Image 1 (cartoon, rainbow, N blue to C red):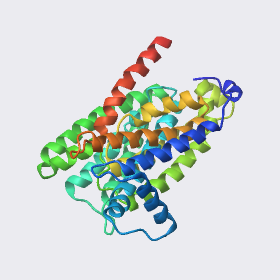
Image 2 (tube, rainbow, N blue to C red):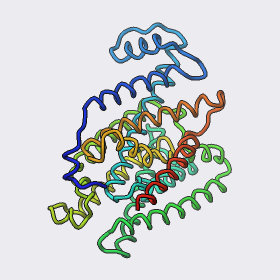
Image 3 (cartoon, one colour):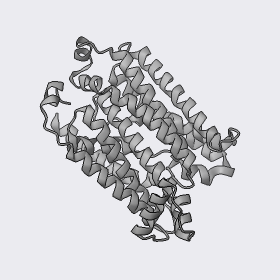
Image 4 (tube, one colour):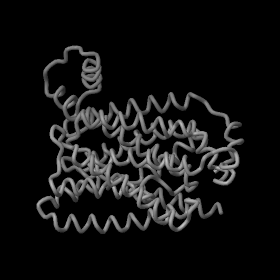
Length: 347
């Protein structure tokens, strides 16, 4: 991490954001066009444009595929990728650890456990088919956060980042064992749960996209609001405290915000690993370590990455669809080794 004074002196071109916006737009169009049924670029743009502005759309198979299947899926993938990436960037800044992301705290595992319990028990909310899994995912995410922070505080009253990461890793391992146990005994839902735990955007709808969008706007806005504080953490918690940052308060707000956003993503798409670990590093290479620029850039890079991963999952072995978590894990495992090697070599 660099000194905040160095962050101000860095040269930055807004042209980078323009390129990221254009790249995201064309990636979304590509993901709508390509699939088991190929749709032309002109038909895709026309259908989406007319739908946005309320114009009449010719009744054909392309309209049904685009508006009822691919568009809601692309929107959910875009929003989830952006959410997971900004969470990872915030956690890496907060914990001052390039290998950290939201799942390091065990929040993702806790949310996954809650959602899996909802699926295995058939818990639903009236009028909202996915409401049961979302509520339990949110509840378990908060419960995981409270438990991890409580254990970390019991071991280290300063809530140091090392203690939080250690407890988070141990908690994740424990939850993984519990999830495996549930999948083993829930024989009626084994196939569904096995596929869901590896991540899937199959069957998502506009209601889920709206919830993801609302959560990203609120939680993402909070994280960007604390960009100066995250920059202050780059020089260490003690120095940040000396320049007026309320370290414990900022930590709690960011951790709670991350847990909410990850809980929503997990409840809709299952466990999608490594997005929050890889993409902040890509964004950092493009715009530098200043969180005022890094967090927005992470939104774009995470969305683009997950869109391409979902496209690969849908088309690589078509008509069989791979779990998206398999694709992100393969890429993420290689990236993890590279990042870890560079981190150790730099010491």
